[in-house]
Image (cartoon, rainbow, N blue to C red):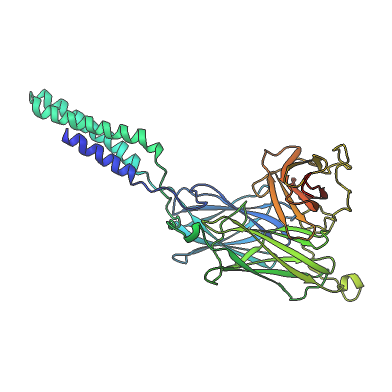
Length: 461
């Protein structure tokens, strides 16, 4: 009996000592998807999970806009030993995956190069650990089997005392294995090989907020000409670069750029070019003030929305006819219906529901109630113009901005892809709002702009 008790106690201690997987957004075997706006188009990099190391790491590039077989150079480097492997992939709706061999788990860096731009994306190669529970289950049954055979042989030799002891040991092995089988599903799995160290305590329950410094290169961009919007992220506590962004809705950061009047709209995913630095190339079609809202999430912290603005000046050579236009035309034209298009916010009432809740044009959003009230949920529906496929992990996106730009909201269509998209949103204050719905078709991302007049609650005036 003492042997049985010792074995049972050992099994309980093993189960109690299993460490829970506390690392944020870490799952061995799962694929990693990261949206990137590179070479003037919208791509999603897919890194398939690997089951062993050394072993193959499969990488594909999913295109959401026409790219005509855009080639993308790949480089994967281990952050621990510097070992580097390279390859090439082609962006496509249904990509063929490129295999690169990795030698170890842990932190790696993926570098993408396309169209004269490059992005440096940190990620981790994760592999499931061998289960301690499996060791005790199979070990217990194995030991029980050996002891059971030994007990039978001992009993055959007419030695009942030793035979009973051996039989007791076999029973103990079976008991330990059975207990592990029963209790093992209740214990969270330990972190996989290659996972980041678990953060046990963060002051204030999370990391400090990020501070953002936004600037353009050149400092004074000209309408019609390409420029780079650069975002430097700084830890609000230390002043050092904030380089611990986690993938949030399949992107390290979502950047919404709108003109002050709302006629220009971009939903893009800037490239990480250095620690704490994000960049994206844009082209504004008219002078004026532009607003940039960045949605991101740090590891072990919640989502944060950062706001900035910049000025676009003058009239470009393209508009005046002087000189030659910029030869780089990677940004799609305004009529492509992509997230990089001039959406042309309609005038008040255009593209909005009529009094009966019906749409004024095919594919235009329909609101219920037709006149939303501040602080109360409203439903926005629209019919897709073709078969919808997921983009950024969702069927559709609704982005809402107050007229002065002080408020930005972003919600998702959560159902499976279908011919109709449905969003629920509560407008915080009365007034006019600019809104855009987005969803992906086979060959492009469709952006549908509209305006909404929100009434005040009765008695709140």
